[in-house]
Length: 156
Image (cartoon, rainbow, N blue to C red; front, top):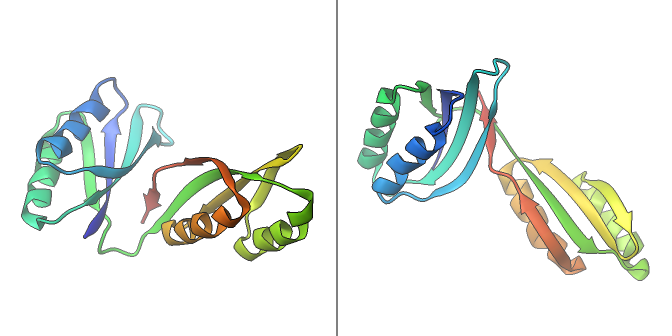
């Protein structure tokens, strides 16, 4: 099961490494990670997505996270009603003969065309992870040149 975990931490060097170390030491891969300052510049929020095959080990990791000196709060959002978003920037081939198809495609997903130069275009999507995944599958039809995707951010 995929777990979305939100962690408030003190904004200090080395905190991210210690937290990531707890997951890797137990054999868990962090599939998504987003970190940024909160409204208080001395506090950062980390949002991690991990695949947990053994719930007991994940519970141990969460308990250990709570014991870290730089950790303020830890919450597993997985079974809660939360808002989650991801951002993706996609550079595609933008051929003149495909302009109508691309325009229709952009409208379908309510995404933004950020930049167009010669025969390339950069598109932005910010949506829930499932919609981003669907969009990325469908946009391949236009020829993906480059892709940049953020980790999930989440809020209750």
